[in-house]
Image (cartoon, rainbow, N blue to C red; front, side):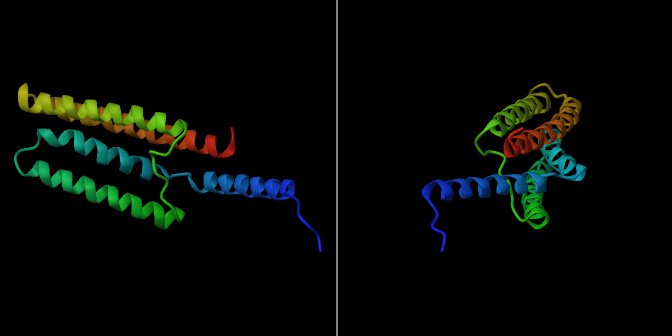
Amino acid sequence: MERLTSADEARDALAAMTAAKRQLADIAQCPPWRHAAFAGLEAALVVSPALPGLSRAVVFLAVMIGIALLIRSDRKRLGVFINGYRRGRTRIVTSVLLGAVVAMLLASMWASHEAGLPQVSVALGVLTFILCWIGSVKWQRVFVAEMTGA
């Protein structure tokens, strides 16, 4: 019977970890609809201040349900949900994207409620969609690079 040394065990553990990261990078490839769905939900949130009365709350609820459905879809499709707030370089992408969406939402609220320009909220929603699609694709690329060591 072969006795493993701690160096052998460490090498085997490192090889297993590297293989697991590679496998995670391989399954983390999202189809274009996934990026579009995320971007659409964020855009809807930014446009919502331009909507009248109770419809703002309905859109907010729809966005929350949409996020839950995306998480469920990821778990079903990939077997896991990869949190966007994980540490590493992906957190930088997430933070920039979050800051941009919050800024767009605040600008949308100001435009719709203070300035009386709901059409600005719609324009900000379109911009949010574009930024979030690009940000989602960028996040995926950074994640795969982190997992593969590229």
